[in-house]
Structures are given as C-alpha cells and as structure tokens.
Length: 418
Image (tube, rainbow, N blue to C red; front, side, top):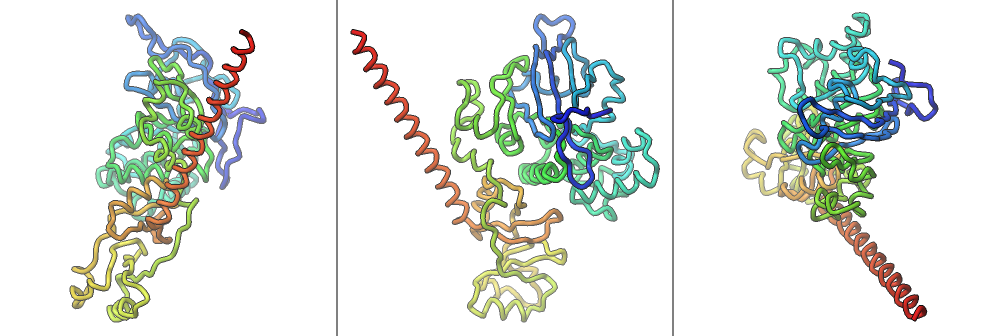
C-alpha cells in the first residue's frame, strides 16, 4: 500500500523505518442488520502522520468497532477511509491488513509457532526473502528489549504475559507498516507490567514515529500515551478531541469531566516524564563484588546505603549499613529487594507511585534491557507535584479574575442601558 505523496501525509521516521501515514475517517458508519441504531454513526476524524491518537470511552460506545473499520476487520456500512491520502475503502482488505500493524489484548500469538515464526509471519506473506526476514526478526526482538538469542526459539507458553505482549508489538511492526492499530493491548497484564509496556511503547514511538491509533477504557493510560485523545460517547460520537493537557484543564462538558475525574493536577503528572527531571547517580555494588569491598564502602561513612546490581547490572536489592550483621559469606539473606524500577520514558506519576511503595524513598531508573542508569528520589518528585499544584492555583485565580471582570462589565453595561 502506498502511504501517499502529499507533503503532510508522512512523518519523518528514524533509523531507516517507514514513516507514519495520515489517516482520515470521513462519515464512517457501521449499521448491523436488525438493530435500530448504528453501532458507529458518521465519524469524522483527521489523524496526523506520526501521531498517537487514543480512543477512549465507556464500554459499548463503538471505539473498538471504529478501530477495526480502519483495517476493515469490520467492513463499514458507509463512509471513506484514507491512509496517507489514498482511499483504501474499496481496496483488497487482505492486502490492506498486511500493510497495517495490529496488536490486541493477550498478544494473539500463534501458540504452535516460535517467537521468531510469529514475528516473521507478515514479512513472509508480503514476499520478503529468508535472509531479510531473519534479520528483521532479530532487529524487532532487540527493539522491544528481548535478547534474540534467548527468545527467538521459545514458544508463547514459555513467555510471561509482558514478554508475550512485547512479541505481539514486534510482530505488528515487523513488516514496517506506517500505521499501528492497538486494541487494549495491555489490558490483560498486571499493573506493574502494564506500566513498563506503556513506557516501552512511548520509547518505540519516539524512535519510529509510526501513526498509532490505540483503544483503551483507561483514561490515565490515554493521558500517558496520547498526543491527542478522542473521548467518545455512544455510537463513537466525539465529545472532545484534543491534547491530554487541554482535556485535563478544560474539559468540554460534564461527560468529559466524568472521564477526567478528581485529581486533575495529579493526573497531569502523566504528562511529564522521568527524563524531564534530574536523574542522579547512587552508590552501587554488584553481586560479584568481593564482600570486603562492600563492607568497606558501607563502613566508610560516605553512605548508609548502596544499591546492589545483579550480573547484568540490573537493580537487585537495597543494602543498608545495619544489614551487615546478616552478611556472613554471601548477600543472599541481607538487604531489601527492589520492588519496582522506572525507565526514562515513565511518567512522573509512575515514578511517584514506585517511590511511595518502596521504603528506600527513591526508585532506580533503568535502560531498555533493565540496566541501571540512576535514581529519582521523593524530594524531586514532590517538587514537581508542588509546581503543578501552584500552576493550577494560578490558573484558577486568573479564571476567577476573568469571570469577575466579565461580570463587572455586564453590570456596567446594564446600568448604562437603564
């Protein structure tokens, strides 16, 4: 499928990847036989090339139906779909689907195929040769943070839920599509794994600049991932289509306010990333270091605590000076396990939650393979919270002043008219 030649149809991709393509939905409607009202009614939406757009709304509002009409897993009853300026409404739907990445909840991997075979599926269908396909599988596994040598020969049942979802994303991106559709892809994993998968998607999008349309019922997830959010009513009627910050600070009506919920200032922590604040170094040792070196460091008085890294330099446990009494010939019984880590692409809200659940008062920051980079502490995060709260108070005061001035003008005009 061509992604169009219009100047605004494509985004600039990095690392030789195909760029994202613009998407236009024009009067898109789905009416199932025997039902009085359409499931999706006359949707108009313009999605920019390289943009992540989130569809969020109550269950049954038609958001997944709208998504599936883009690659025609569900055929529209009427309306047009343009991708990169090209009308794809009447093209061969199988050809269309092979040119659009698609990731779903629970990954949708074929259980009888290895990881490598799952990822290679679409490249082989579109005619890539064996060598190019093999290299692409290796590249995709590395891209989603899985060691090709360790994972290429495994079967889905041998993977954790989070690993399966990473492979699902790798498969969706394998043939280098300009568009990636994602239907609640992280809904079936635990909250910590979900946070890390969201961070991984943010990192991938920063590198690849695909056009992503993502369905979720979780407004916090929408804020975290989206360049723009479409809040949908019944039949996919658009209540508001705007940036996360605009929706948080100025919801269009009570329906949208209900999705925003309480604590808008704290939700705005989802708009800032760990990379936006200071990540500092912290004393570290490794599980391979001689015990005497660890003892000397903790007894030197320069630090009361060190972060123990495993043999892959991943955060393992916190070791404090008063833990030394438990150390005999190994570190096995001493120290407190690291409960959570965050990446540079994690939101400040994720980081704050991780810090508050860890007795150390800080959270390790890690790279794409979980390797230690630095730490973010509670003081840094609380300063960010206070700045957001103060900004909200300033906005509220300015809004109140504008209302007062408007009311005063109205009163003056009424008096002049008497």
